[in-house]
Length: 228
Image 1 (cartoon, one colour):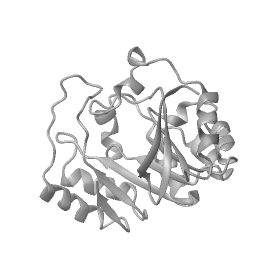
Image 2 (spheres, one colour):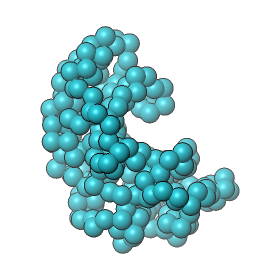
Image 3 (cartoon, one colour):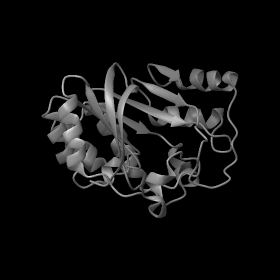
Image 4 (spheres, one colour):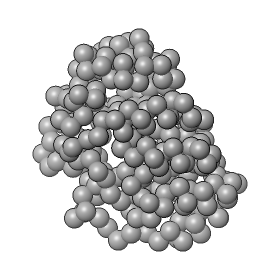
């Protein structure tokens, strides 16, 4: 595992549970607005954290924390993700995985083995516009497959879109809704512009009124939708 950091306590990242957060290094997208360049760009990687150090910390927190979240970067790029997550799950923790959905095989493996309890998938754009947003070539069939697997097999899940001016508008949000039609839970996310993968990325946010319009558009297709 390439681990770039560890947040030891969070009340907000796993709904209904206290959790620790493991940040993995490496991503196959280059979203210009991404707030974690140090986990995406190899030239910004810091020295990786030993997995044994993470395990030792979690052993001390067993019974005090409910869950562990894997985020990044893109956690499913780690070839030993499911094995490592299973080791943590066997310590009594629930497991949450954040993903961009590009490696459905890993998602399916984790769900079939009942290792993953909660999965959060980022929907970057409607399928026709993915490459415009993520700035790399995308196998859209794999994105679609991940959505299908999650909706069919995940014990609990969410889809979410970080909405960015220039990439998203009401029509685009409608198209995203159609992509995940029937999903149980969707979140519209405000961007965090403290630092970004693309230096000098234009930092504009939608108004609350615009976000509510996006929410109304999504509720035509998903069961619940919230803004965060």
